[in-house]
Length: 300
View 1 (cartoon, helix red, strand yellow):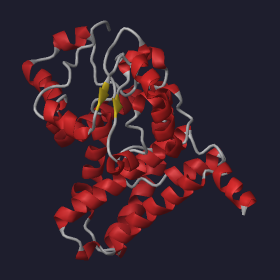
View 2 (spheres, rainbow, N blue to C red):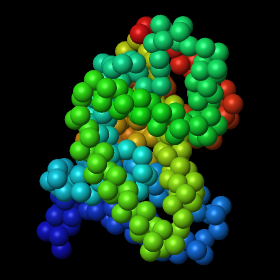
View 3 (spheres, rainbow, N blue to C red):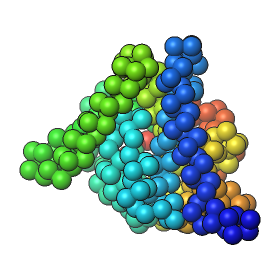
View 4 (cartoon, rainbow, N blue to C red):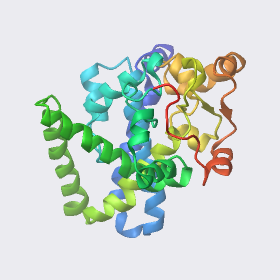
């Protein structure tokens, strides 16, 4: 029994259980979708999609007991539709160059813009970006803005004769077509309902975690937040809400992050200058309709 238990932890057994739970839950939701009210599907489907986004993130940093090709296979299904996994893996790895955190043009996941770009923007464009810095804005239009930015970047690549991502997009289109065949052709859920009731809410919920996890600051450690949330959100985000711990020790498996955080909390909060929130309700109270920051980088 001890040998089996040791092997279970060596191959990161909790992550295997997590993957089975996520894909099993998604399959059951699709199979029984006709019996689930639309309002319940928004919450249940959205949770599962955001959960898979967290699993994809985990396969980038952790799950080291599994070969890279098999980690890719586990994370590849595009349940959330929007982004080929190999491209996400590459861009997120660039995000972890801590020196460049939040710097537009360097950090692939920043919500800041350069001062010169802000100066050229009209009132409408500035208003949209400011609305996206409120929590209600991030949940409502955040996915659309991320998709718009992604489209601009990919079209720009093609115009510059950079075709490196085309094979990823080709495979992504095939996988999405297969997903819609199963969802609509087998389970009977119209594809547009899947987008509105499952994929989009999942995307929005995923952006909840990223809403406040970074800010501009004089040193990298001060730019990374910690949200000490409950188990419901902690499990959803695989404790990546304890973001300062993740950036300092990105290869720690998700199920070991809470213990690491508890044991080192004082040092971690000193490292990030006490950039901490007591949960997402505190964030909601402060920033539901108020911008978390003006999206003009102070130095870039």
